[in-house]
Length: 175
Image 1 (cartoon, rainbow, N blue to C red):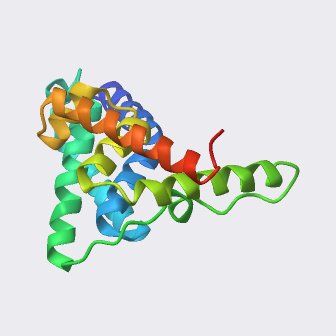
Image 2: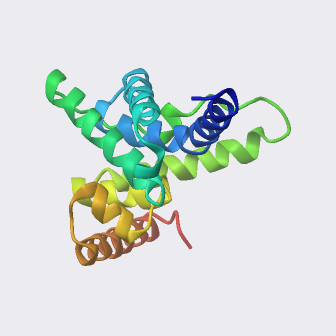
């Protein structure tokens, strides 16, 4: 690889890491139950991306990353024989002190309420909701990652969001 090609490749990898790292860590953490293990899983996914032919992942990079991440996280889960879902607030850095603290605490409370309700749903529903809203994937991309049909993904998302909305309204958390 020439110097300019290497520089272009490194810039591409850096942009991919910047764009997907956070959502991949949150996604992997739902399988590993631990933010550090999730980071290891994501690091492994990025290392595999570095070895992959870029042309093979162009056009479906997000699905490729989430699929590799999911498979590796499931391997870790099977190896450790345990799964403990952590909330996004546990995986995220502690909020900065300052003027925005009240808004952040309120937002964190809302996220915790949604995470609590989300944890009452089936594993399939939880996974498709996380892939859609944390990963930003389309129904087709979620279908490829989970190996469910696009129709099933749509049904699971619709049902999950309806249940979340109903439970939050019943608790008075949603007006």
